[in-house]
Length: 88
Image: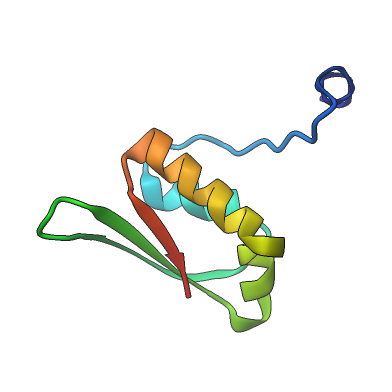
């Protein structure tokens, strides 16, 4: 992994893939303590995942300038067709 990071000159992050969207998104947030997960579907067909985290970990879950939250949204869209991820 370190060798690949040096070759690509980028930091890599590995997330265990699971077919279940709930488990996958919770794994992607580790080590943040997740207290709840809800997947809702709007009448217009959009799917939104609402993830409740421990208030002490909320800043870590969102990340600097929303970096972690955006990464989570991209993964959710790519693998599970979830349009938005909300961290509360």
